[in-house]
Length: 184
Image (cartoon, rainbow, N blue to C red; front, side):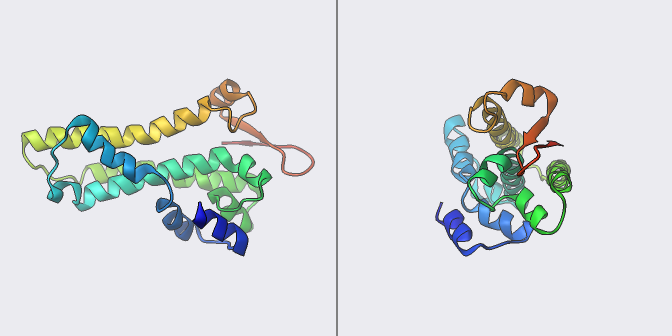
């Protein structure tokens, strides 16, 4: 929260990479990844959990959560005067609002591609450890999916239109006047 307040109070605009780096430190995915090991009773050796591919998978999943959240929360954050949002950064770079959402969507797609490419780089550690690694990776993936599902179930973003937004994948944004509709 301090990072968000500091950025808001200084009026910092940022690059996408800088914003992602800042937000990776403030989002709660890392503790959840540690809980996965505990919840499933996994015994992953340090060499596995610190392997570059596993570390990259965690970063990618965190980025997916961040990007999804920024797309979903843009209107709420805009109304609160917050600018620590990927869509806002693209907009500050001179893109119109739809282009900003499109860029955020492309960034999200690039993380999905990177996820699958990173999976191909995983070594094997033996049958027992490999089974645990697969459960761990599946659970990390589920963190991102759970966050997205929560966003559609919570009343936080959609003013009661949760099911409609989920079905149509279209959100209406009050930019100023008139109201602008963009596709997410």
